Image (cartoon, rainbow, N blue to C red):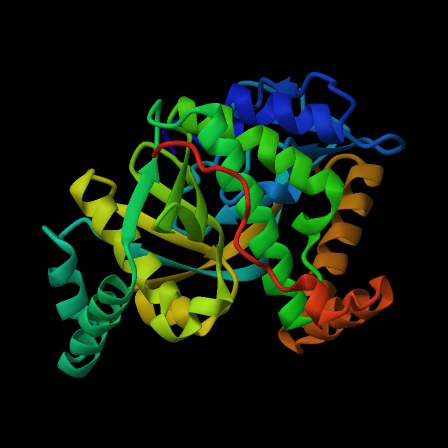
Length: 349
């Protein structure tokens, strides 16, 4: 993958600041296009960013062997991103399937309507047009994709403050815990996205009602791929199907700006199945020195552990876990969580 946002200087340095005491990532000659952080006790190296990436790729160098006596664990390898020469010498691979992923391949489409015509019935197409018409007739709606230097820090802070409020509201209503609502993760995300947007490695899509954000999406950007990462909308507008409108506007922008793929990323959700035209799996890669007993043992343990974890996920145990975690943290009074109009003065868009 060209210009992978998850191996960029901005991503690795800010992730390291928040989660690795600002230590420099470790690179190895045998694996190009990826860096690692070392486990404190074991000869185990995990990709920089760990599970906060949305898609990694790498290439093995057959002429190097600095993998000796080590294990390398890599999260989130999309099945559709081809990997070449995945084993060399005593270096072996255990690949463990994890989350399902979905994407929209837009390569052969000249506009959004062509894509919709290929993937939806005439009844659905009419419904989508009604969603947009109803929203735009009822409110003063405008759409904005922030990508590059078309956003000020003041605008960014205003949008992210709204993002945080909407995110808290949404997951309180769902009574499900979301790890990005921890202070540590949210501070990381807020610090990360602004420099990534300026360098065109991320984007921020916002639907405004007047000057108030009612739908906000964070995306990461590769050379021809948009990775949808986080989306939230104000549930007070639920009857207007903001989720579908958000997707349509994303796909339209991708086609108009020559991005061939919109990746809905991990998560087996019905809306992703409906809007995608390709399903794939996220794999975890475990590279290890097969001549080392310790490395082989660690690799086998990791493989068994993540296979078991996926089995429990397939049984929806993770949903129970997130609900229990939410309840343990304490339910807040819904009236206290109701989001009113934000009293900040919005910056000019």
